Length: 581
Image (cartoon, rainbow, N blue to C red; front, side):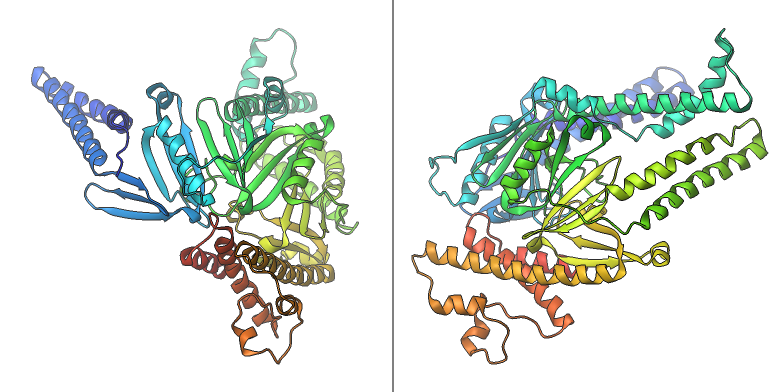
């Protein structure tokens, strides 16, 4: 068994002590001042010293009790000071091994290692902290053992650099990025600063009437745009500094980050959805971003339910590249090109225009109420955006659509942040049709293809929005049919691959069984053969069969692929996740 790095003891102790020590020091010295005299200050020092020694003692005990070992088929972790916890993580279930280092950790030569598994809602195992060399060794050994290479000196697969971000491209990433989390702060700042600034400027600035409203709105809009751009530029440079994407065997390996440096992997076989993302500026200059989703937790994001969709982690496959390069990588990974989309009905353009006008009306009404109470508020200013609402409605309709290719369900949504999602049929877990009260009035529905991707839990699935009710029912049935066909074809492909690895040639019987239509007179051998596909008789049986076959597909894929295989636990995870959905 191996211990963590000895330097992890002082580092973790300092990490835990800073906030606690400051809080205790403030309270203690405040109390000492109240008592007055030397004893009060001495007691404060003793209290802070006792807290530091307690934390250091706990961290030393944690270091002594934390052990891990790379066995032939599992990563074993034993930890716990007061309560012991033993974990055995099979390599075939490990999806990502991610290494992260902030500035202080790089200074001390430490690294944090996080192990993610498919279907998990958080980190399955964490090593905090080991040396950077040990972290690289763990990442390399887990990848080797997943591939089934038992020899320690087995040659590594060829490394093919797919994308590397140059300094010029990094600057473009920042220049074309916006962080829209600051508009509220900027709005409050501008509304309070504008009247004060006007009083110090010699140039006559209107403070009342329509002119004042126009000038104020223009100033606030400019400040919001400038702050959003500056925040987006800084965030992009910090996150994607030194970005490199490399294909190593069946994995995509990435590294990125300036302050917090990440190194991780994305298993190609575990990809759930590919997303091409852009905005008006990126489209104008011919750039786009490629995002990938894998099953379960998103590496690089926060643990727990508070993890935000904006924390991309390993999901950012290419932060920025020309659209041709992005589409070429999508074609290489999934064998699909951007199709011709079918837009929602033309009458839906009016719905979008009305929706934007109602939003503007609500803002005007709110400002009018505030003006009635406080006075001096140009409540009518948002009315100048009415013409913009019409244009925005048309553009939203134009950039929305859906398509069915040979092997993928493709959707397109959004104008300011347009997303084109490519979902393989065999990755669909549930097809959902929803209708809001407003959609019922317009006789349209939304069809969503739910997957096990990490963004699914926060509404990031592929969705065909505002399509005719009859078309939505047809689309749902078509997706169900293609899902069953894709699962059957995938299972047969896995079966043939396993036969080839065992040196067993395919027989006519196997072809006939795999391609045979549903019949009532299946033989007993056929009924027990897990590779024979049979069409269910009813909608309920049909859905149950899809759920079972998806879970079986994980197991078959795991058994056939060896290092990517899943055990009974992963099969149960898939079934449980499908049922919960």
